Image (cartoon, rainbow, N blue to C red):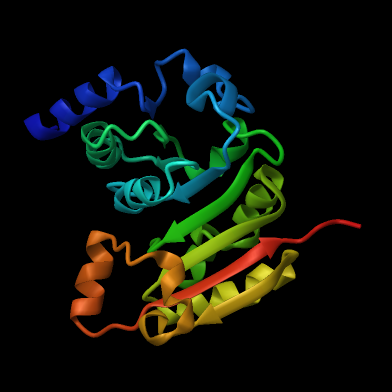
Length: 221
């Protein structure tokens, strides 16, 4: 393990805005993010597979009256977002280090208002399908933690993965689906506030089109 990684892991251990194994709050935070961490009643928005947290931090800056949680399994990545949020004194941001398969161990039913999925690994091979973050097994997890009518956002440069998501979301009960295959020339462009991850900047500079969709958790009758 490199010295740089070790330093980032040390930072995570000392940072109150990183929730990870070994900290007491890691075991008790489920259903209590507003009470025990943010100490307000504001909406909670997740960024899944947040990487270095560029989107989480960008959203936190844009919406100080909302709470944002970046979720990723890679500690050396979220350390960068954690440090950026601290440097900007953004108390409405947290990072959770866990595998996305275990979301329901950290969030109670209907605790989350919205989810962003930004440039996830498209897992392109057929045998990788169950690992795609819009596979039905993941969508069922999101439905458990999203409030009725909660919003799911997806941004990706990968068209096959995007088309796959356009199929699975309605099949799993998500409604009000709107989408574009060219975000930057679409009226929907304003929704993402111009926030770009590192990889999005690389993709757009090379001329790749950015696909975007949003939909809502259906309300059971």
